[in-house]
Length: 221
Image (cartoon, rainbow, N blue to C red; front, side, top):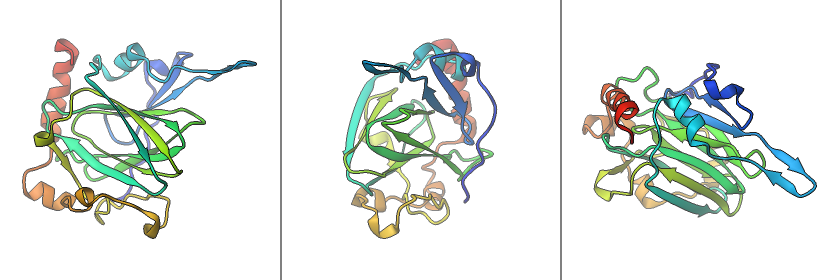
C-alpha cells in the first residue's frame, strides 16, 4: 500500500488562534499545530484543547490514562490498536526529541484501508496527532531519547490490544531511516501481517467504527 494523500479540508478550529487542526489523509485522524507565543521569558503554547478538538471531531474526549515512552533513535513502536468498542483513541505529542508518527487505516471496508499518513512530532513545532478508535498507530524515533506522551480514552487492556507487523510489505511504512538502524520488539515483529490479521477476523470494521463514533456525540466518551 502507498501512503495516502493528505486532505485539505479545514475544520472550525483552523480559524482559532490557539491551535490549528488539519484532517489527515486517513479519515478520523488529525494533526494539531499549536500557536507559539514567545517573549523574552521563553515560549508558551497550548498542546491540548479539549473544546477545539471536540468541535472538530464532534464529541468530547474523555481521558482515562496518560502514558510516556522514551526511545532510542531507530526504535519502532507499533502498529498497535484495540478492539472497538470501546477502542482506544489517542492524542500524542513529543516533549523531547523527534519521532515520525504514523496512523494506519486498518478498518476493513474503509475507503483508505491499508493506507497511512504520517506527522513529524518534535520539540520544535510541538505538534500533536489525534487518532480515533480502530486506527493503527506506530512511530519511529528519529533522535536519541525521543520522549512521547499519549493521552488515551481508555485504560490498557492486554486482552483487547493487538498489533500489526510494522515491517509489513503490503503497508510499506516509510521510516526515513535505513532498515539496519531500526530496533523493534519481538512482540511487534511477531505480530501478524495486515492480510493475516484480516483473515483471522482480528481487524476492526469500518462500519462498526463509524457507528461507534456516532454514539460518542450523544453519550460522551
